[in-house]
Image (tube, rainbow, N blue to C red; front, side):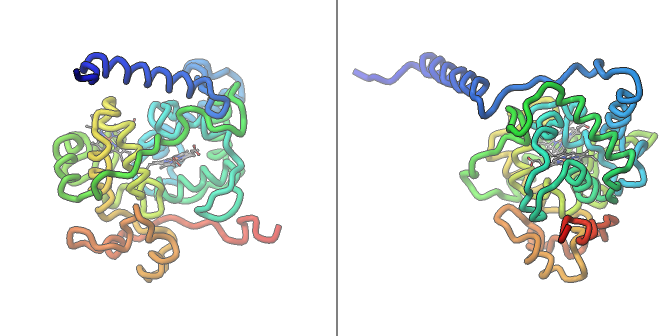
Length: 312
Ligand code: HEC
Ligand code: HEC
């Protein structure tokens, strides 16, 4: 006689397992759950004003931090729900993790420096000084959102939920198919996204001159696949298979975008020094295009090495 469970029993036990894991996760002292304060609970007074200003910058940096922005994206383009959404690198979970060592630049980063990094790479822009009103406002917004959270721990929902290695090598043609079926409607067939009549971004650009540059975290296929699987298509996160997410991330990141700010005229040298990883297409030829060879120059300015805690 077969000892195989019926499909219903199998589904039930899978559900039990998921629930058990969910409980274990929430109860684990390593990954506590956290809920940020309600969006309308921002206090009045000067501190509340700074928090509101931070929220404004986060939602619309073109208007509130124009001098530091070099594309049409907003912070909320990648950190959904005004930076509140678990699984899209929420601000409350980030706040409690800094200062932190980052291998990307090889030293301990303050929160201000982490924020500056998003301006330089994701926003393809310039670095606001650490004591600028812009950074102070963003830090205030984050601090307020993390009210009551324990510090120095990875909260449930931090970052993007990492995916397992893909079963098949990510593929341009399969990715293109996913893109056409599930993404092009909003992000445009040419990846340009869409802006309204006032040039406010409705759907952010996925590649091209107006998107994140080659130094941004999202140019890693692994990071993009994780973000996409958890969050896209918008409001239908988790509906693509993991393989579809890998394939469409490969397709998106196999297109030209603004140059890596580290680039000093030699593609091979920049590739060697800052790229070349398994998930990184910069400097590689995909679908007949050598990526990084025809990028629009970046408008970013890199932080002065002398300011990066060298020798002081
Ligand atoms: C193109 C997408 C994109 C845009 C636009 C963007 N970010 Fe990010 N941001 C990322 C990615 C990717 C990470 C790394 C997430 C990870 O490590 O899992 C990140 C990380 C962060 C972190 C650290 C998160 C953590 O948990 O350590 C902060 C804080 C942050 N971004 C703030 C901002 C702010 C402020 C802006 C706007 C000025 C911005 N980001 C714009 C993609 C973006
Ligand atoms: C219904 C419209 C819609 C669909 C369909 C959609 N997106 Fe998005 N996507 C958005 C919006 C809107 C944002 C920015 C979130 C915000 O501003 O609140 C976004 C953000 C993104 C981002 C981060 C910002 C950027 O420009 O890099 C990526 C990557 C992304 N989408 C990829 C995809 C992929 C891949 C698909 C298809 C699997 C897809 N999206 C389908 C609306 C959509």
